[in-house]
Amino acid sequence: MKERIEKGHAVVPISTNFSRLDIFQADFVEQLEKIRAKYDVPAKLLRLEITESAVMGSSERANDVVSQLHRCGYRVEMDDFGSGYSSLNVLKDIELDVIKLDMLFIKDESVNRRGGTILSSVVRMAKWLGLPVIAEGVEKVEQADFLRSIGCDYIQGYLYSKPLPPEDFCKLLSESSVGTVVPQMSLIETMDAANFWDPHSMETLIFSHYVGGAAIFNYQDGKVEILRVNQKYLQEICMNLSEKDLISSDPLAFMDEENRAVYVAMLEEAAQTMQEAECETWWTLSSACCGEEKVCLRSTVRAIGKSMESYLHYGMIRNVTAEKEHYSEIMDSERRFKMASEQVNIYYWEYTIATKEMRPCFRCMRDLGLPPVLRNYPDSAIEMGVFPPEVADMYREWHRQLEKGVPSLEAILPLTMERVMFHVRYTNEYDETGRPIKAYGSAALVV
Image 1 (tube, rainbow, N blue to C red):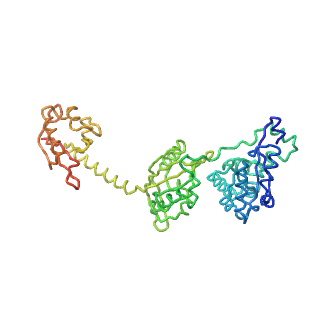
Image 2: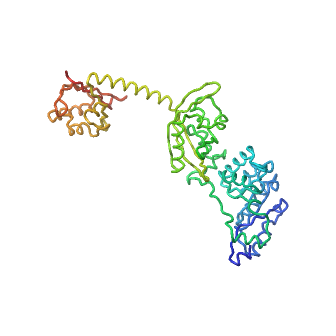
Image 3: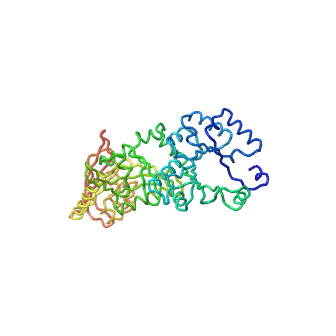
């Protein structure tokens, strides 16, 4: 490497394996630094590979060595990850920079379904921890295609090159693009997604106890995979389902085609904008004890991480089924009321005293061209000619009386420029202190 640096040739990091006997020597880091300093090669170009077996039972000592190496500028790789019995403990206890996957998972002629699932989960976990992944020992195109599809940062093996003499290796470096990394999962600046898997983190505390129904899930190519849910998520669904029931299910299967399209569109929006997105969808859920039920869930999601075309989402739900049913009842009542008001020629409106805002009925908007909200009422209506000039001052005085708390007012007044006679009536509504807050008005055609 020193020779190539001096000649101005392209260089890439070189990884070297070290055994348990090496790294636990008292002066290991010191001796390594002496050799590196002798040739004046930057530490960032040297990678140290240690195996899981090398640190088993001595994670504290191993972490101390890794910390020393980091202070000197080296990167440390975990070699043959997944081949031993305590790989997850190693990730938890030792501050590694890169993990190298053991290809024993997919050593068969084709990608084994079970092994592929395990590999995909390991790669995803590494992404959340911010660890680049190297898949080593790749010999077949099918393996490489699969590894790329699940987001491996690097792929190495005989598929690309067998060991070479120095001159051939230098030629390869000069003629090839070597060491190009696929961007790993980037997280939004205000949130560290890895903390959701730390049982002692503030994110986990809030996720478990202080937010509503929440879930963390992966979204890619129109597919959703739930990774974690809290108890309130289960309570919002109200079907006596367990975390396992939801994590092992496909949420999109709970929706019909129309609702599924709405939900996916929301996920796409959140993924593309990295901002919060929201929608309401109907889900058909079933359980052994509750049977089948259709519920409306209001979902709010935000993408908190991205790796290639895979997005990590944080989502919250609220069961709004009762609200939807209540709204449906109100709309049904409104429909019947509209039909009745058509028969008796009644106009009605709501006046908010504090803000001087008037909200007219559908007939007011249809027949008189009023907007959904009139501000600075009643002057805005007088200016539009709804109340002719001869009754304008009297109508303004009515509203001053309503503000003072008069219970009701009524009179026969000419309305619109045509001076059509209507029986106009107001009734006041009060809060718990007796202060007037709203007045309800109506105008019935005098026959």
